[in-house]
Length: 119
Image (cartoon, rainbow, N blue to C red; front, side, top):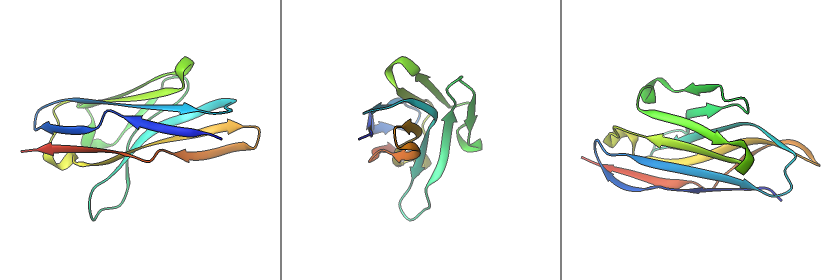
């Protein structure tokens, strides 16, 4: 059974930084795209950043220049370095990954980690 476990959320002041991590575990054959989504209260879940197994990245416009997504393929882990945080970045951040197992390729989600940015 595959699990995605996020860590690194918390409370930070505006202008500060946080680093999120998400580790995938289980009977994994390979991982294609890994990424981060977020959902603020009363809003829909939205893509923040994604990264392919070869390291190509895609960012939402609202985080470009502030957030950096990276991964360690050997550790099946994806990271999100968040700098210059703003109160509007407050949300639950979810890890997402397309993972190949003996059952085929499926879309997996973590349970989320809360990021709160105070003004």
